[in-house]
Length: 418
Image (cartoon, rainbow, N blue to C red; front, side, top):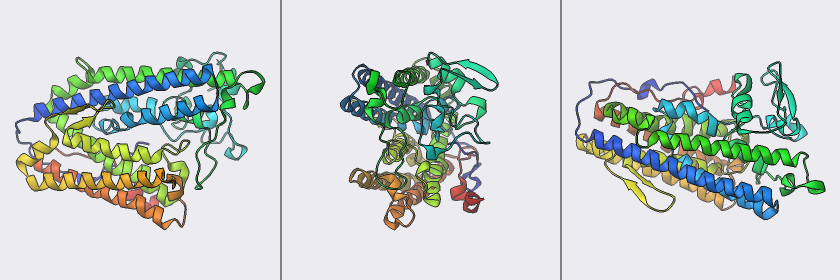
């Protein structure tokens, strides 16, 4: 979820001096971006192969393999989220691939407790899987064939409602796991493999259309990642925009770090859920993979500052870094920021470790779970502290004013409950 509140306390405005090495720093940033999107595309293609195998021979084993492929596909993608803020080409595109939260009833069947259409969203329970024809915005839509174009051009954000998410990782996640009906108890979604079966074994109805939706969404994810990978490669729009103006490139790097660190991750994705004790505020709420989402987001922030990214094949992309630029003008700021980044990654890692040991993130959000809240808030506090160090880095580099994304949960907590 994108917020638009800038943190005025974390902005500065002084004349920008000339620093040697900015061109190389930005070039390495572009190389890391290209590698991370290329890895995301590679893992999405592996997900597609697993989805094809599931639909060819539905079973508990092939469904689990598809789920594991989805989890693996998230690892490199999440490390690209730091490129979103500060790069309009990414921010304008991101809603196609990672929009959340979503009204899943738009896509498929849901539990009766979910409810139906509302004043906020007339299509919250449209259930495209079960309806080969439906009315949308007063027009009859022929959905007899579920295609990528139907999902992207007709359904996604229908009627300009952000909760009408029809594409991307989270639509695929819902189709693979189904709803998580466990609240703040342990357990992810439990969609049966028979929801993709043929003939009399089919559960949930319309198994062929459910499979078609899953295939179309996965195909669309791949095409979107192909496009973005191209933008960060030779001759791509993102590469050209960044390398043509190294000063703007450095600002984009710091904007991405500060905005993801503060308003998006610490605020909207973490503290808000603690305040509301609401598992619906989990980013990967169907799969209970949120601990990984937070961890790899944090890792992505550190990657950009240190100028280093470990690819899915184990190779490393590295070069001149923001750290080297900052150290050249104020080594104390550089050391503090590196320490802060290591601290936030470590504390996000503790959440990941606890979840992998059996205490899922939604359990940590439960009212009265003081230990779970402490784990999350320790990471939130570390992310807020490192954002202050990012602001110090902005000052050290003498850049023009940078406004980071904010969140009511951090900036105006009382507004969350109004």
